[in-house]
Image (cartoon, rainbow, N blue to C red; front, side, top):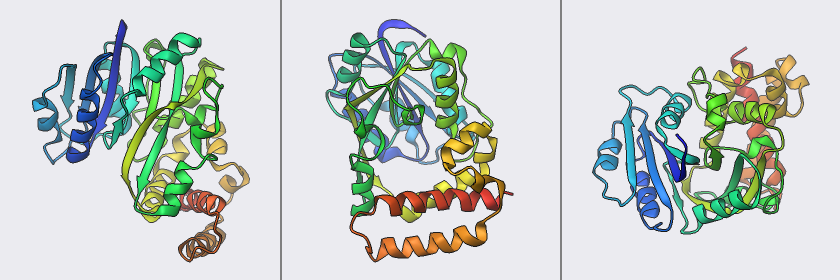
Length: 294
């Protein structure tokens, strides 16, 4: 790991063959950067790995297929260990790059002294109001200017650029097998070890197509709350929930009715600006899973 001008693109896949093909095609259009594509297949059954293995590209390829599904955290660490680049670019297998995505990151890495940069995701989903929420100026990295220092919670593996030296000190938590939390766990420990080292790069964009409905997304958040939230550092748990007292009492008798009511208001478009309703629905989904695991 650490070839000076090489960018290792880290991709983890699980039954995303069609989307993976689109991502690889978008990477193939980038010809002005030295790129290594690192793909770890987390036990797919749809021949995703065969597609990667047979894909023709001018870039270097480095792939591994896991026999069994071991979770995103384990698979991501395997990919990190395989990478040879000075910078590691993390992208989801169901996203695509723009022609200038990596250019934006390389420009920032030369302009600022930082170990990590967080880019923005442009969402295209099945529900317009959820899409507006995700693409809104209040959400995620979009509310920051280029080069601003940002909260660690924005350093996610759906579009981030991290120097290889970081991974000599920090390993991903492979105990987080189910959905969610592995990125927050990593970025929290990163921020503790390297404070003020994450900068915003909202102009480095990726496109996420076919984003699921809010109901499907909330089922994933429920899984995160049920399985992984308790495994996070207690201080990080409070960051996730925002209202720490909710973690100390089982308030499911209040949270579940609130979740149902908020979802009803969302469905009937009771409030034109759905930002806080969607945010509250997502928090309720996490807490419902958390209480079920108690």
